[in-house]
Amino acid sequence: MKYTSLKGIQDILPPDIYIWQTIELKARELFGVYGFKEIRLPIIEYSDIFIRSIGETTDIVEKEMYAFADKSGRSITMRPEGTAPAVRCYVEHHLYNLPPPQKFFYSGPMFRYERPQRGRFRQFYQIGVEAFGISQPSIDAEIIVMLNNFLERIGLKGLNFELNCIGCEKCRPDYRDALMNFFKHKLLYFCPDCQRRYVSNPLRILDCKVEKCIELRRGSPVVTGYLCNECRSHFNELISILKALKIPYILTPDLVRGLDYYTKTAFEVTSEYLGAQKAVAAGGRYDRLVEDFGGPPTHAIGFAVGMERVVTLLKEVQSRKYPSPTLFIATIGREAELEGLRIAEDIRARGFWVEPNYGGVSLRSQLRKADRIGAEFAFIIGSDELRSGKIKWKELKNGKQGEVEIDNATKVLSNNIESPDP
RNA sequence: GUGGGCGUAGCUCAAAGGUUAGAGCACUGGACUGUGGCUCCAGAUGUUGGGGGUUCAAGUCCCCUCGUCCACCCCA
Image (cartoon, rainbow, N blue to C red; front, top):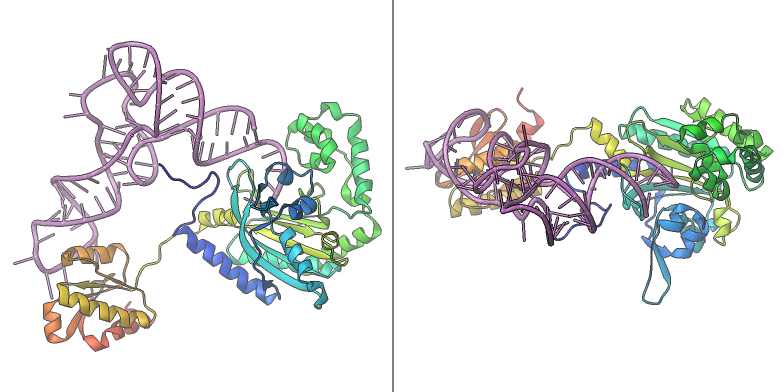
């Protein structure tokens, strides 16, 4: 194969595309009734936007960014995630001057230079939402409920809704210290990765999968024990709202986030059926980020849904089918073909999908084709029909056929489709 | 970046170092001059991912490379 797409970057074709369209449609509908407005964000940004927000020592920034210099020599990056651009947009357009909350959603491709595996690609799509300007946990609850509804509505079941509070800039250092203290004496027994994490991001030791490390971290400090009063009451209030709304959740004290900007509420929706990359959606609060971008102190929270992962799960439960045309028009001879095209235009104008016959092949193969593409009806037009002014129609699934005046051809479709024969 | 599995027709896969690399599905046509599905017949389709090596002989063995899948790292 001479020309292929890049590694980890794939085309999305029918019939998969219909699943994508359904998901996007339902997102628009549902997010709309919660007051989220669509924004379209650029795919490339100045690199600093990601370096400063995601964190210089994170893997995303250190080794996964699609970064390059443009012709002026400035460093440009293809976005690895959507929150930073959304915050940049919010600040750049002074949207903090509008009455809070300002709620937005967006969708599109993200890029990370990683080794592809199940559920992970170099170009992948997310639908994200961000809500700016509200500090109260009621908005945390709102987006969690909305996410829950969304996943349910597109047909996903059996998901785990994991929830945690990772503290703020006031209390997280305390927890971090406590954790490091706990690990300090047995550090040498941990796996090399964890020893590295101890320096770079000790919280990450909590989700190491190595058996030995799981054993060693038994009895380690729990984040919720170190929360400041504000974080604790925020978290408790969120939980009580979720309880009141009967939203299922799993308290997961070792749930940590890979991006530096998260504060307080963190959540992740996972599925057991996805392999190693099992998060279908994840999000959390980022109460400092707007300020970091030069805006006023502004509370904010959001989440992102991984499209490919949702599609993967949906493909397990949904049969994928190509849609099929309502009508195939079979014609014999040049004159009939022209008449057929005219009729096709009439019927298309009424919103039916019509496939014409494209070449001078036998009636037999034309009807075979009509059958194979799954057309509901076929029209047959030949010299007899042109002479009499009546075309023959046939309903493919039961072989029923008849004749109709050319001018009334559309009625065959509307009559039969509105009241299909048993 | 690290480790492992797999690359043969459009798709799913055969061919244990030995003729001209096959089968099913799909595709095109015919049997049935103007009536689909079922059946039967025929046809088209390959640099066996690429390059090098071993051998009288390589799809098959060896090396390199590329691609893909899975896992690690990390993440949606």
